[in-house]
Length: 71
Image 1: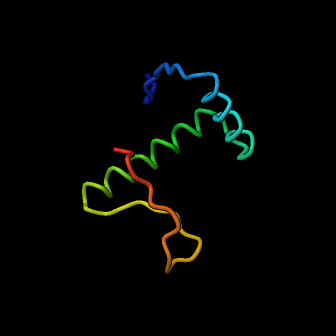
Image 2 (image 1 turned 45 degrees about the horizontal axis):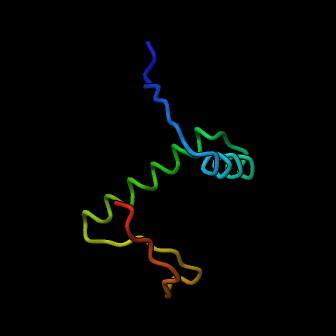
């Protein structure tokens, strides 16, 4: 018996193009991209529950972009 659960996911053609582009540029599959995206959402969710924020930085002393509204 497999230790994985199969799910079906319907997305718009635009989102499919985004997934294909990311997968191609990173030598991954669309499934890999979705798994990684879900891992990032979990990190954001856990951080929010702990009173933390998610952001992007080019310089560790300065926040360039705060990511809000994920969960």
